[in-house]
Length: 203
Ligand code: ADP
Ligand code: 5GP
Image (cartoon, rainbow, N blue to C red; front, side):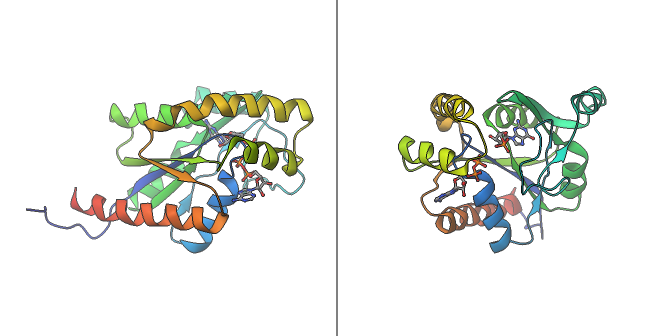
């Protein structure tokens, strides 16, 4: 017998996968087709790319400011990814979950595993669904990383080697989504979130 239905319940949608697989592109499309989702904006010490805007794409911080925030426990998780530091601000997530909203977090595989640990030990009072985005093939991943032209050749090769290692952890995730076409990947994630929304109402 299902328990009494709540009207809403907030949770996290953690989207991870190798660099260049298309996480940012797919998440951008997901927010267009599912506008009520809330997006967590990470902090990073990486310099902004030409089209990126502070506070919209990332909170771009100096290393000194980043570690000040680490010291103040401002991050749900933080990690070094490809020579720079990245962190997920906790305040925004707590505020949105409190309002029963669904918050999307895009992190590397280390970040996803740290978030899972915090949820398991009840340090974050909400549930989360973990989605791993994979490329249709490693060749296509290499092509996308090179075509993005945001890194030098050595950095592309470094990210590609890391990606192959990162693909090994995919079975730890709740769902695996192939990013073949941006639209269909975003729609698959939308369907997953709708299923999880129903499940959250029954818990
Ligand atoms: P990530 O955030 O995972 O590092 P990006 O979103 O920056 O990856 O995508 C890497 C590159 O691949 C970008 O140039 C993007 O336009 C392209 N891309 C993403 N998804 C697709 C797709 N489904 N088909 C073709 N190109 C894609
Ligand atoms: P990029 O520099 O290409 O924007 O991101 C590099 C990697 O860092 C990507 O895999 C991205 O998902 C990851 N990343 C972005 N924000 C965070 C974060 O807050 N925490 C962690 N652990 N990884 C992040």
